[in-house]
Figure 1 (tube, rainbow, N blue to C red):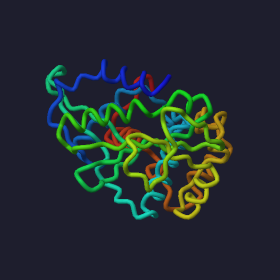
Figure 2: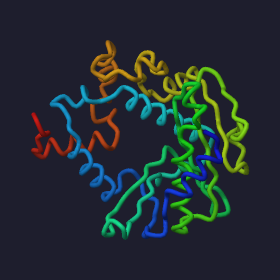
Figure 3: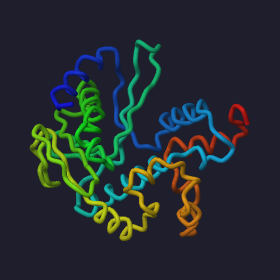
Length: 255
């Protein structure tokens, strides 16, 4: 699928005329965490939260953490607010949200949005992450949150797969509308080591990312290798909300 096809699809399918109160908030925002808790309670989960987790989810979260650290290392103004929230009149003014992997504030009331993906040749060819960026751009501009949006894909891959319609750019490029920054698994591992971010053995391999987390031989070491790493520390906002719900006495259906 080409960029123009994705752009047309988003333009046709995403109606922003019914949404309002559009804003950027941090992942710790009380309304957002409440939303996540509600979603978590609706998920069918097993007694063991880890057994219902896909390794790819945790790998993605850790890679995102490493890339955000890389942005900070390069003195990029990474914003704490990276969740778009809005209300929709179609759904009785209910609140919805879209979490971005990173948001950078630029001069001139501009934002640079990041989607970070561990990709294969096939997923890179499909321009994975582009639709999320386009949807975020449309929502932010509709709400007057900023005047311009620069969109960046960060693809983690052993090889670069060039796109004729999405140029490869550097972090210093603040003018190209949409571009790809390629990062190798080796670079991610160096960042993870520098910032003490644990990675699952073989994390960049598709066969590893597709496994349930509890099936990995290294899961115990992955969780307990550092006394600061508890289950909560390696959980995403969604799974942390699930854990909090269980602590309040909620029991998963079928358990």
